[in-house]
Structure formats: C-alpha cells, structure tokens
Length: 118
Image (cartoon, rainbow, N blue to C red):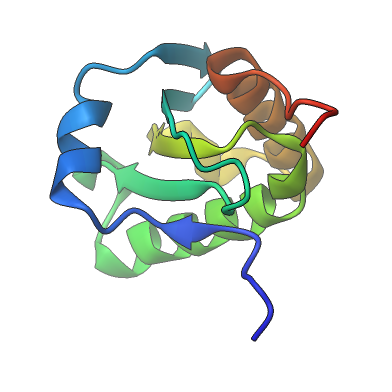
C-alpha cells in the first residue's frame, strides 16, 4: 500500500509535544508549529486548527480540506516530523497558488527543508 503524502497526527504525546514546538513560523493568516521525529522515512504528520472565527462548520471544513490539499503538493520537500497548522479567517480569500506558496514558506521556516541524505 503506498504511503500518503501527509499523515494525520493521532498520538496524544505528539499533540502534547506540539504545545512546546521546536520550530514556529507565521506567514500572513497561516501559523505552523513543528516537532521533529527520529523516523526520517515516514510522511510528515499534520494536524489542523481552524478557528470558529473562520465561520461555521461547513466553512471550517472547506478551509481544512483546502489547506490539506495545499500541504500535499509539497509534503515530500519538508522535514519529517509533526506539524500543527493554524489558520485565520483571511485564508478563505487566498487564491490556491498563493495558499500553497504561503504554507510552503511557513513549513520551511518552522521545520526546515528535507535533508538531501534522506
């Protein structure tokens, strides 16, 4: 079975670790927290935090799906580990290409690029 480009964060310990991240970044309406993992062969684990200020459940789920799809486009280029992506309401106004670019910059600053030896 092929690996997915992005795995969900499922471990309680990982969520606890994300409360004290090793790296953080903010780019416009996007916030990213990062915790490294020892296993460099796994896909990045990503959790999403979409505030109720972004709208109702339908709007928040739409934002979450857009952000998940954008992260999947560059997931192989980021450092392995766990990421927590937070969004503000302004993310709904971003074109998809801009969203990808903004997320990629935030991920790269928070976790660094994937090492070429991996």
